[in-house]
Length: 360
Image (tube, rainbow, N blue to C red; front, side):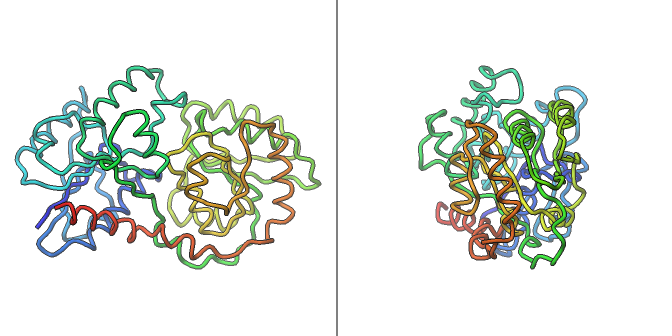
C-alpha cells in the first residue's frame, strides 16, 4: 500500500493556467488508478480546493491558511509538520521546497515546468539570486518531475542533476478536447494565447502583422494575463492599419477556450522560450492551422504538424507565412486524433503511477 500527496501553493481554482490545469487533471486521473487501500492527500491554499476533485472519495484535502506575514515560510512550517507526522508517501510538489529531513523520509518529486530563472526571460530582476537558490533546492530534491525532454536536458545542464533522477511527464489535454469539433464558422483569423511578458514575443508578431498586405482586415485575438507588457503591446498595436486586435485577460471556462479554437483559422505561437507550450497541443487538437517559432521544445512536442519560422529572422518572413496560411487554411487540414491520443491525462497519469509502483 502506498499513499500519495500532491501539493501546490500556487494553485488557484478560479484561474485557468497551464499549471493549474495540470494540477487538477493529473490528480483526477491518478485517483482513478490507485487501489482501494491507497489514498491521496491534496494540499492547497485555503479556499482553493479544485472543484473537479472535491467529490472524489479517495481524496482528502488539507488547506493551508493564507498568512499576512511571511506566508511562504509559514506554509513550509505547516508542510514540514505534515511530512514529519505522516507515514512514507509519494510526494509531488510544484513549489520550491526547503530541504528538510522530514521531506527526505518520503519519495519526493519536485515538479519543474521550466527553468526560465536560469535564462534572460526570468520574471524578477533577481537572476543570480534565484539561480543559486533554485539550483540548491532542486539538487537537494530526491527526484525531479518535468514536462518535456527539452526541460530535462536544461535541468541536467544547469543543475548537474543525474539523468536517472528526472522523470519526464508531458502536459495533457482535458477530456473535452477529444470531443468532435463543432462545424463552426472560423471567424477569428489569428489567435494567440499567452501571458504578456518578454519571452512570449508579442511584439514580433505585431511587427509581422504591420507588413500584412491582404485585401481583408484581419480579426486577431490575444488572450493572456498581464505580466507588465500588455499596455505597451496595446499601444503599438493601435498603429496597425489592416488589423484589429481584441485583448482578453482570461477565459472563464475550458469550453469557452475550445470555442475560441474552433472559431480560429490560424493559431500563431511566436514564443522564444517554453518548458512545454500547452496551447500548442490544444490548438492542434481542434484542427487549427498552426504557425510557431522554431524552438526545440515545439519540435519535440508538435513534430511536423506546425509551419515553423525562425524568430531571429525578419518578421516579414512570418508575414508571408501568415498570408499564405490564411488563403489556404483549409488545405491539408486533417484530423490529428492519432497524434493527440498520447496527450490524454489518463495515459500521462498511468505512466507515473506504474513508474512509482516499480520503484517501490
